[in-house]
Length: 101
Image 1 (cartoon, rainbow, N blue to C red):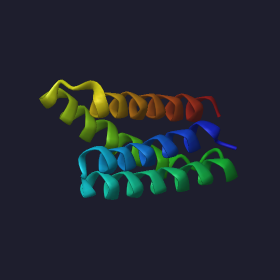
Image 2 (cartoon, rainbow, N blue to C red):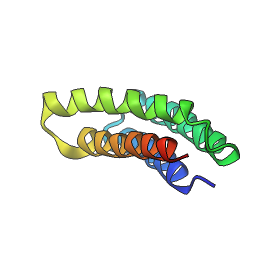
Image 3 (cartoon, rainbow, N blue to C red):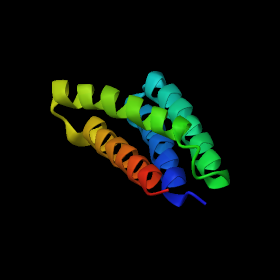
């Protein structure tokens, strides 16, 4: 079972929910739940077959680029910097795990 993938998915979903609760951002809620759900599906795929990293790799790559861009423009670590770092760590974990398989 891909516990790290599920934890990543939960963090993304909760981040979107927090953006909605703190700032009233419906876009944060929608994006967080969409990307979180896709990440959870990707973690499920990896849990069933460790070679099926494509969905989670795509989601974490897109989030690392988008949130990295937002972090570079705003300079604020929360939430863009944290999400970027979590996404980059997930990308690195998936690539290293795939190479070791």
